[in-house]
Image (cartoon, rainbow, N blue to C red):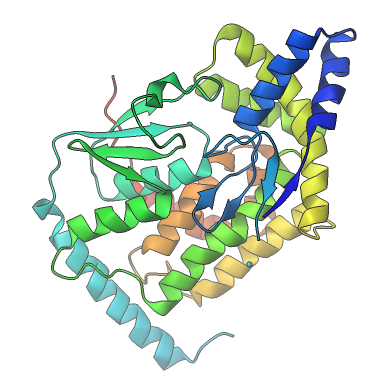
Length: 325
């Protein structure tokens, strides 16, 4: 992996918000930056802009034809049967206590939530403070998402989803066909790479993103103020570096292309899974859900064909299965 030091950004932030920032203040900004500003997915490592599953002191950058009618139709029928069969067996898995340790805006956490919501598995949520992570001190695993199911710890969003799927469908635990596997990988290895440059594209969009993140996250009042403005300033500059790293010349064009690529992959089907979503549908939906009502998400729906699919996913996923405290 290639590491890009962003301490220079932290210095810029210190000057922007305080002029003569003290060493302690500058260090606090670096701690916030380390806790909040990661990037993307690479293998088993999931990081995305502010919504980092881990909290390294530097930004880690990771490495994303139509078919004939009868072939597509046959595939859709097979997928429909498989997913209908899955739903018929959901009663076999009835956990008594499911708790998700998360960051509210984290796309990887939202992948897990999309799965839980779709399969109507009730779950509680513990919002982790990204600075001190005191809520997961009990775990040797210091990243999110962490899912506890009747005391069993599960980690890594894709592994969590695979294990839950196996519990839901013990008679046939292998969910992924080649197409489904391909597009689940595309989500982690390509789609997430275009999001940070878009949600931090301008200073106003960066502040909008951090306003959402700090409002929904577990921050103290002081941390919220620092994260909103210092974080927005830092990520505005970091996003520029990410554009270069991933050879993105036009942020919106890259986002629109990704959305259109996904719609093309549907090949006229309601969902990639046919008439019911499969795990790839849930992954794309989960990753996009945090940005849907930000300017970048609104632009994406307005300027691409993804809107109908997204609305369909909202309908079938339905209300959150989260248990209110």
